[in-house]
Length: 371
Image 1 (tube, rainbow, N blue to C red):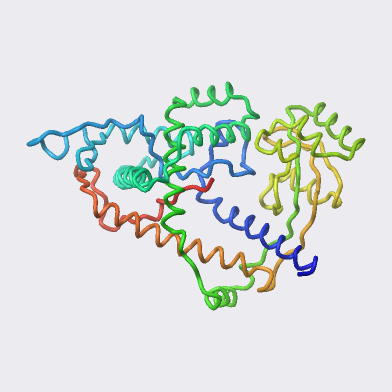
Image 2: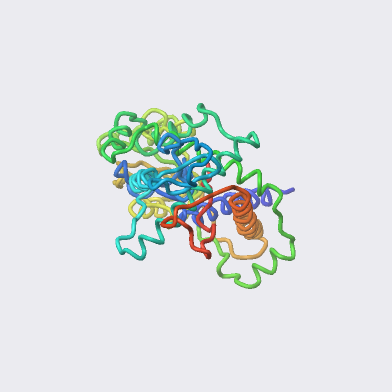
């Protein structure tokens, strides 16, 4: 294989990854607002609000023989496990803080929201149990690592500031740990259930031919960045980079971003649309190999490095892999939705009338987040 073809494959892989990240952006919840940091650039914890379930926040009781299926305070019962209406209210509050979940205000909309919340929580509980039964549940160390990465990305590694933000929102670190564990468990189970999904070359070609313009990938740049708290520190970092030519060393010395520090500040290959506007303008105006900054964003003051530039991708050969990944993703979601429905159908789930899901309620929201 020639050097040119190797570069092309690398470009395609990076483009597919960037395209997939952008496509999933709309359904991925944001924790960034707790840090006052605006849009997240790097997905550290791909959590899905619809799969949220903090084990410690649930009231779990064992029911005795002869008792009614659900008490007046219950929302639903799975076998002998009871989840109360108050538990659902508490979970919704957690989702509001962590993900900015919008709770409807109108009575009719609120009723549908309550019913869907109950169905979703029931499915989530079953997913967690199934992940444990199949041996794919994560351990506490993995949960801690995931949270540490998140704190590094959005809070500059400042654990106290992270916990203060949670306190301001009225949620505990234990609730966050339970939340993260369930999301990681759900993702692991999702990958196990959908691991064998494939599409044929003919299906890939047909999808491209139907909408060739829609599959085009815009110009991208491979970028590295150093984030600092103030312009003076950013200027010192830039001076050091320009004097030494070693951006990675300066990133390890200056950046507040724990998630990229060990990689010399490398952010990945990104499109203009994936970046905050001030940073995007500077990054795409700078020459390849050049440095830029300081640039102010909601997250701090940045110094950047343009590692490489990639032209737009338009032909079938250039975007084939991205098309295939997208089709596999779509088919995987169908497999997953069917799996979740099977779990619900097989379980003994009994809802209080006010929480009984509508007959047409689907599973489209039950998508586990990516790592």
